[in-house]
View 1 (cartoon, helix red, strand yellow):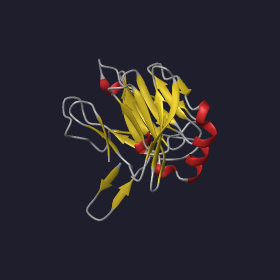
View 2 (tube, helix red, strand yellow; view 1 turned 30 degrees about the vertical axis):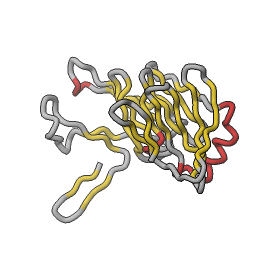
View 3 (cartoon, rainbow, N blue to C red; view 1 turned 90 degrees about the horizontal axis):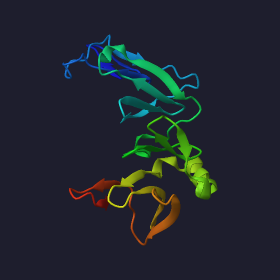
View 4 (cartoon, rainbow, N blue to C red; view 1 turned 120 degrees about the vertical axis):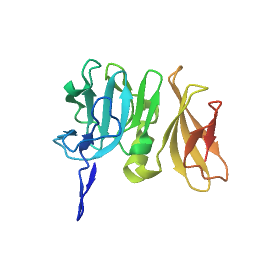
Length: 194
């Protein structure tokens, strides 16, 4: 949250602000949620999961439950205090949950907020890269083929780990003489490498 005044700007890397019901373009200064992460850290991304809001921080994962009957009666809990997210490019929503990149693993967060690591076959390699060059790591969900793409390295060649969500298997994809560092989807749900 960044609050800009006449003379100065205040920044709060652990605040979430929300609008009044029925007025999405009006956000009162009093409508904020402070995320008290005992390990410290800042917000790197926000996503929805069922009727909840998931707030990914560098050192924890928070769950904001917002009841449909009265959204002002929200409740907050730190769902996973010892699991953080690398950065905003390390979060991707899939039909039945969210995959995100932590320092130790690629984790699947299901609708019950169960956090399941899926990295066991590539864990040593993954941890070596997340510890040394986490900013190159990206995650993308290929809707058409139900696969997860995770950037392994980008130099003169690009390597991706590819996770087949249905089969729960990993493979390596190599792109010769090209540097891909972003993903997108076209109107037909085809993955575009940028």
